[in-house]
Image (cartoon, rainbow, N blue to C red):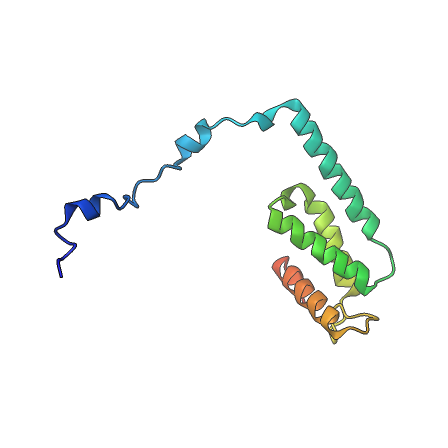
Length: 135
């Protein structure tokens, strides 16, 4: 069997992994059509709508449904990478979830489904610990 070590045609077809086409200069030189004022206005509108939605979700009574909706919303905002627009609202949402937290069952308040309790508690635990709450 012939060795591939000396075969120049085989090695020349393999791309050089050290060559980075996506360096900072290249990325900064790219143009985007989304820098116009109409896009900025749309972003501001959507951010304000999400902020209002987060405020509407908060009530004084603690329930599993509200708590689960809150942690799912915070998790989605963080996964999308847009949580920087909602720092105060996320803090308020996590404060709400923390007020509803029960050390013995987590977020499983008044719910018959153990699976729903487990999902809500696991997600709540992860987010609360990530944001330095004592749980």
